Image (cartoon, rainbow, N blue to C red; front, side, top):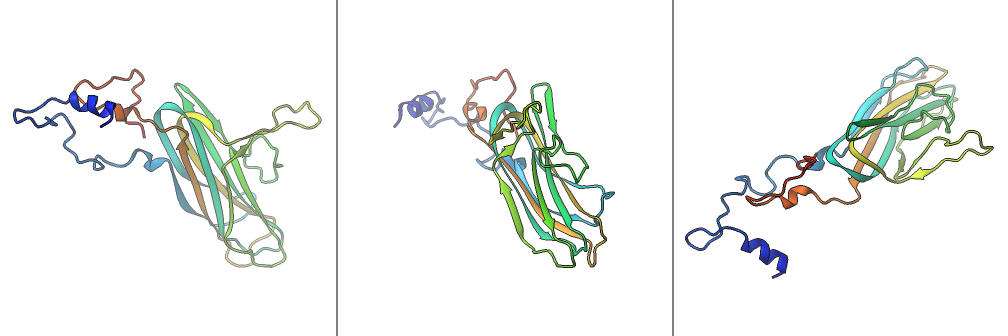
Length: 234
């Protein structure tokens, strides 16, 4: 028996019969105390864009909401699969832009996107991650099941006074609270020749680089207290 396990068992009060008194534990069996804390750390969703055009508002889908109650460093995976796109005479552009909201303490940062479909790749308002498909016009049906995915993001140009602006890539970020939404648009200068509907399956997933929950050290009548109230985060 390991020393730590022995010390933990020796601290448990004994009932009259010599058996450990476990009355202080939760009456719920292990694993039946509600949803797992990470049930909102990511999901997939099928998004339908009912029409195309510059004036059509993007379809927005929330994919993740994390309230971890303490700062952590997070990894991520974003993906989008183009399942269906209209047939058009002029090129069709399909965009998926992931907007990220991160917070620590009382401060919040929103990394948003704009509504300019013609904005260049280096534009500062491309969201945290942007996927774009260009479907050639001419009446040729768009190929289906085009999957894009990434575990890194690229920053906007950091210093525009340089002849070659510097951009950085990152595969993690610090946050206590996280929200992610995907904005989906389909834009063409021509009307659809057939069904104007665009359909995508979008994904966003997060995981902390180090997952040690304070809840794990809270057993017993003399449970540790945490000043930040960081237990039971979701």
